[in-house]
Every structure is written in C-alpha cells, then in structure tokens.
Image 1 (cartoon, rainbow, N blue to C red):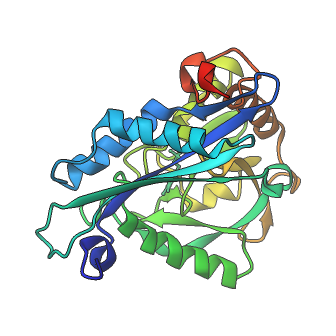
Image 2 (cartoon, rainbow, N blue to C red):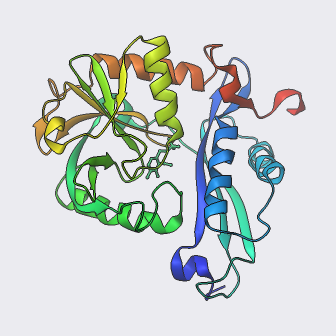
Image 3 (cartoon, rainbow, N blue to C red):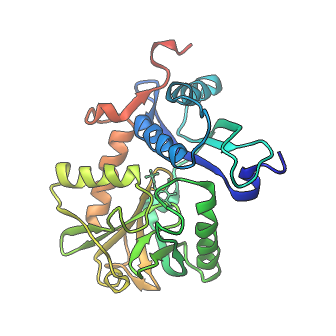
Length: 288
Ligand code: PMP
C-alpha cells in the first residue's frame, strides 16, 4: 500500500542469508538458517508486529523458494517481514512477508580485497535507533555512508558510533589484527549482532588458535593494524587492503585473513564436515 508503514517509515525487518552449492554432494546448504530465524524473531519482537509468520512458515519459505527455483549455484536469499497495509506510526499490522533468492557469483573483493574510508556519518546509538534490530530504516544511515565513501573513491565506509569508536561497515562487521591478536568492536558498539561475526570468532579461536578480543576500537588503531577485514553473510570474509588511503600491512590481504577465508568457505560449502549443525541441506532426498 502506498501509505504502508514500510513505505512511509521503513517499518520492516529482514534477513540476508546464503545458500552454498556443493557440486560433489549435488546439494545446497543454507548457512546458519536457524540463527537467522532467531535474529528475525528478535527484530519482529522489537517492532511489535501483530501475528507475524511463525518460525516454521519462515523456515519453509526459504527452503521452498530454493527448491522451486532448482538452483544449482550459490544464492543470496532475502527474507523480509513488514507492515504492508495503510497505517500510521502506531500500526503493528497487517504484516506482509516474502522470501526471494538470486544466484550470486564469487566476488573479486574476496581475492583482491577492497579499500575503506572512515565515514563522516555516525552510526546512531542504541537509545536513538537500535542497530541490533535488522530494520529497513537502519539502511538509510548505511546508504548515506556508502554514497559518501564512493564519492571519495573508497570501496566501502567504516562508521564510527556516537561515542566516536569504530562500529562497523554499512552492512558488515569489522575485524582488526594487531600483533597476532584479533580485535573486533563489542556487541555494545552499535553494531548488528552479526552471525558471520560469531562464526569468525569461533573459527579463529577454536580452529586457528588465534585469540579474539571484543572491545572498543579507536579510529587511529585502524592505521596500526597489520590486517583488517569486513565480514557478513553477503561479504563473507572480505580483506580491507587500505584505510583512509593508508595501506593495511603491505597493501595485500593478510595471512590470517586468507586462512580464515579458506576455513569459512570449506565449512559453508560443506567441503569440510566440521560444524554440520551450521548447514541446512535444501534438497536432501526430495531433489528430482
Ligand atoms: N552489520 C550490518 C549493519 C549488516 O547489515 C549486516 C548484514 N546483515 C552485518 C553487520 C553482518 O551480519 P551477518 O553476518 O549476520 O550477515
């Protein structure tokens, strides 16, 4: 509806998920589907939606979309729930939902990395509009920062929060490696509680035996880092090779970042048996 709260106020929430195709197994795996459903549930709760679709309906929407399209390549999936009828600021329904998926090829960003610049736009603080909720309206801030970064010749922005500490990218979390220690802004830094961030922390600590510290990060620390990378479902593990036109390390993706990428893709694609609970097989025995 042209007067719907989603159009007027951005009153919608969503998840971006990925399905990874495994040729050998002739199977697609959705990565961390249950954790995405958990976060969507939290977002809908904060939005106080009336009678939103159940978890079972949302899970099924993802799997049915992938099956119906018979994808045989990696996909990006968008699962969205929003206020669709005419309504004012106090509307909590009617609630609409959709699931869509598109093939997604491997990005050159993964191998070559990208440049980043610190944005002049700040991430809003939790008491202004919570970034922990994956709401459409939050991407106004992300978009302004992205447009500014592009106009300045950077691949992507890094946003500081209202306290002036590093928060995240416009749609991805940030990690810094200094002297063998991995550091990332804590979940109280006005970031989205990223599922990839959680994956990365666990892989670094448990599989690569690299310590990870969650704490405030200063802008000027970015200039001392040997490695920097963004992570998200869509950006996976993307090396940052320069920040504010200063090379990160030798200006090439770093060693820990590379090892982490290899591990991440092996697990997401199901080439490694580790962390089987993170993969939901889409076709199983029903593939025709
Ligand atoms: N921060 C923001 C603002 C995002 O939009 C995203 C992408 N959903 C992320 C971080 C990364 O989250 P995830 O790893 O769960 O995709």
